[in-house]
Image 1 (cartoon, rainbow, N blue to C red):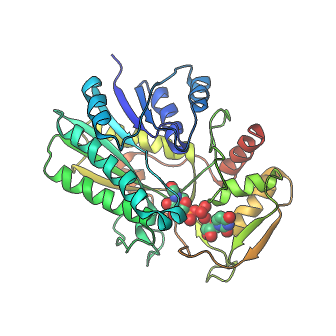
Image 2 (image 1 turned 30 degrees about the horizontal axis):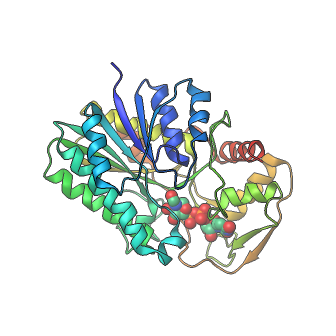
Length: 339
Ligand code: WQD
């Protein structure tokens, strides 16, 4: 009997790549997605890779009765990996209540259902955004949590606190939060990737759309930062490596090897790359010049953020296998496929 794992937001960018890795590891996957930021086409992409079509239930996790009904029907769920959330930093500033409702109510409803079970395992999609501008680089899990720069970032901080407090009083519930750095790229088969819904807020999809001529030029948000080339530094991690970290975290919980009921891991490559370095790496993999111009800084950007991955390496037994060029090459292949 296959072990059943629920993936909320499983038709999203990171979620769909995690579904593929879970299926590769022999888990039965049930996806919950409201399709607010994805399409059912992604199911075909997953099946094209693994030849297994995951069970898919379309509903909104803000609808508590539907969440209760789901878990009463799927009482054999071994674990939940929770991606379903709104994630646009800028939008969250304009629509805070939408973000607090969508990102926190849904988390609470799921945890309430898991608390009822004899034992359950929960993986939470968190973000390095909780660190703000860290004093020390690379960033370890011991780095202080800074005041959030946006409601989006705040929902990740509050979400972690909700899980921590719940696990403290629920012996039967074990959880791991994975603090992502910057996920980029696509599955090598180019059957799944980052769907281009609306104008990309993130750097790499904007670069690949500019490379395709879908965007006139990339605006580089500032080159007057105190870094080597003046542009911000981030830790860009291939989404497939990130997906594999979720499987490693889930296996840790299922095996009972976790030392605390709630653990946190930074998931990045451990290497920082500036915006200009990403641009030149893209030009190398696409063998073309990229149109870009330097403009003013973007509100809320931190100067530099890249992970110390020692804990994930040693405790999860996970380390990234792909580098920036692999990720950009896959992102470019994906962009060309979906043109
Ligand atoms: C990266 C760098 C920009 C676009 C955010 C969230 C994080 C996660 C990933 C959800 C920055 C520069 C960008 C552009 C640019 N979100 N840039 N021109 O802001 O590090 O992280 O997205 O999961 O939680 O905080 O990612 O890709 O937006 O920006 O110059 O058109 O690229 O200034 O230095 P960010 P990003």
